[in-house]
Length: 227
Image (cartoon, rainbow, N blue to C red; front, side, top):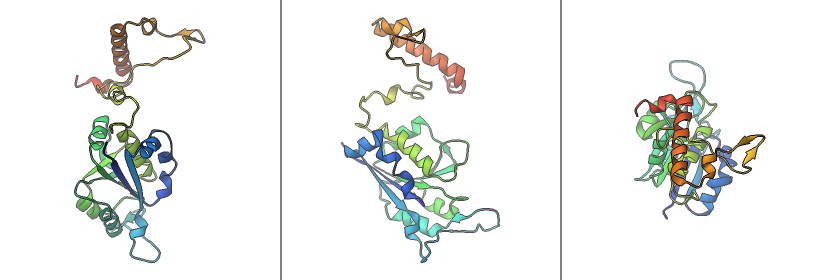
């Protein structure tokens, strides 16, 4: 199987050490299916203080990352097949479909936003697309990068134990997932739906489909508008 490489460019490389050293992502790295590299944008500063930000032209609060160190950091890892993504509140919303698409790339470069943002010239010249994980603002783009990596790697062949698992999750059929149950059969007076104990796979599949549809109608009816 081919290996997917992800380079993450940020001001805080240590931010990522915990999440990528646990669970499915760690197993994918051990299997050689996923290669994650952490790049410190400050390493590309052209001054002894490693300063990479400055005041915005036109005034206003906060600081802006300068274009030169950002561009140099991207160039240090960029290849012909690279897809460069800027994690930003101004980006297109991250969706399951987008995650599946990104999982098809052999090399992703994730550029994390910091402070008030990045000089637009670096974005215009180097970034292929901007992605947002939601309509809210984080203190930096590191957590957004972690979310994107976690959501995307599930679609890389060989990473999940069951190859059909990702295809059966929420959003894959424009609806949420159905409820799930395991032992004990009765918990604090509440029993598992009898159909799940029937052994009739056709009835079980139908129940799951209807339960998923009902959950979607209650919680995310917007997902059904185009059906």
